[in-house]
Image (cartoon, rainbow, N blue to C red; front, side, top):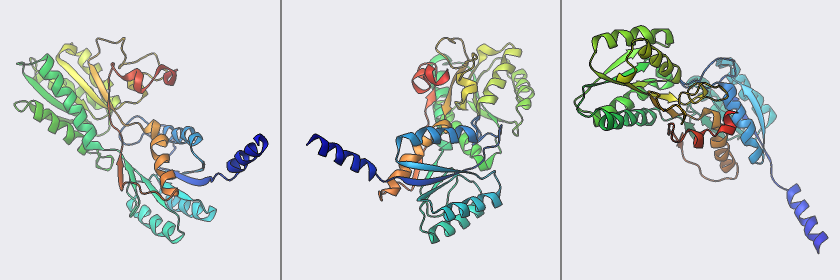
Length: 324
């Protein structure tokens, strides 16, 4: 009976269905960051490679290279390979519309990431929600620590990056700040994607507001670090609090010794950074893909679980074994 049971187990294992899933990444070019954060396409791909170990899938990788012709060619290659499901990460609406038609003709289901594909379920960042989390954190800090003091909200970063949803991120932060502090003004400082503009823009504002506490919502972690440097140079560290967006390794440390958000860094004016979790996309997207392959219904839209990373929870969200 034992041998028979073992035989059944082996047979069952042999019959376990495995699917071939294609993942077309937006770009894997070194140094190119995604979604207005510090994460790269290589971070996203690594998360898929790690997460795939948990699921009965064999992944095929494509690099769209942020190029329309390459994006279309990758979809054609996936069709020729007869993959079971295609995961598309592209913000080229014209290209994804063509891809939707081609893959549906081949009866290959599609799952979209951060850029809608007509008729396909979408996994996406939620920029308004991320902005509100930052604004809430700053507003609550002001009510707790600076009640009765003159405060000014500051939105700083690449505020015109419409394709990345940064204006929605900024608007969410503005709405939350205004809800907590209806009598405080909120100003914008647009760096146009140039971190070198943070110091002069913020320096001018600091000179004009010598007795005001600043609640600074930066649109990315690099801007947060630059803002902190500008405040330090102006001798105004005690007059500001910063909440950032992204929670990439530049702010929580990663394998580096410089950890702005860390339980040991009690004097940091960076309260926290809103996580975008691009380095965990594989763990969020592949379960949706497997559900689709099994014929289960999935939501039309699934949003990233944005959370505020602070010194209190950084080791829970990014444990030291992930950093080292």
